Length: 446
Image (tube, rainbow, N blue to C red; front, side, top):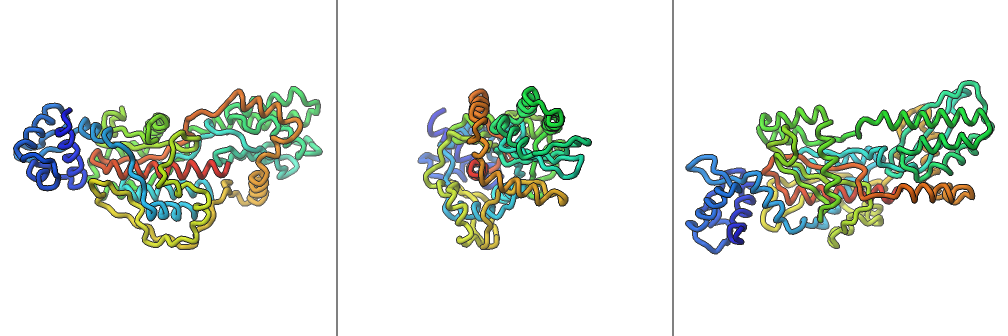
């Protein structure tokens, strides 16, 4: 495409995103320094229409971008705009008040929805993509054990194990043996590793406990049909646009399975993108419910090869996360802005100046077991390498790590769904920023 024609297309997309009204040659001449006459711009717009980048809804109206036009525009965004210091501080303060992984994910969805004015979706880490960090067995009654499994992504699974009338003298020693075998193992292989232990243990009571634990891990893994999905902004999108335009999208959100498959796939593709963000427009989603929408997605929870922009580095700095309580977060504008146009909506967050330090208490708060589970988690976080240092553990743990190395696949996704005329620059910047926060949040705590 000719460079001037490309500039005309970009100008049409920018103006339509801002006004949501068909764009004519006169307005382009007025609002953009294209260096050519209105007649020349009209000719370029006609050529762009013939090539499928623009469409004219009415003969007397201007043009609007097609799906092909939006794709060309998104591909032409040279880089994602860095956030300002005020925006980074706003995100940091808003999220750093979280008290658990689940709270952080809920806050992330609300934050992203507020920034973009669109639907935000954040999936919790999947057990299938997690590794075992620690397993603890706690006897809660004469016939019942509580098994608590903490993963490297901050998820915690727990299961009650009926053990009948068997008696084991030292559950602490048994727990050590189990962790020697399972620490750093992929969750989907943990049950097999636990069963292998029974082949080397003579005590029949301990073998029963080990078999029960292996069965419980199998049940946990098989019972995870999908991630927990945190959704925000649906009502906001419906109020801003005609609800009928997104009726199918809202139906898909009710089912969730379609959206989960799509955004999981896009988040994995995003790991190979230069900016770490994937954009699917209309038919590119291969989802009938999203033909009128665009989806911007990123993954989190893996060691991304994508470097942070220097201007964004403070957002992901651990010291800044912990020191955010000293910063005034009142009325901070956390929306991004493009160098060529501004988002219509300015979103502000009014948060308390007293922010809590990020916590690693990711545990399900069941009243009858809360205290002992909290103690397990705190102990594990304070001595995450204890089991690796034990004399029996070196060969087993090293073997587990060598056979199942980490891949550049995210454990979950974060994304935004909105109309095709969404503000792509703002949305891509916001999705990437929050995804990187979550990535660092999990990394610091594992």
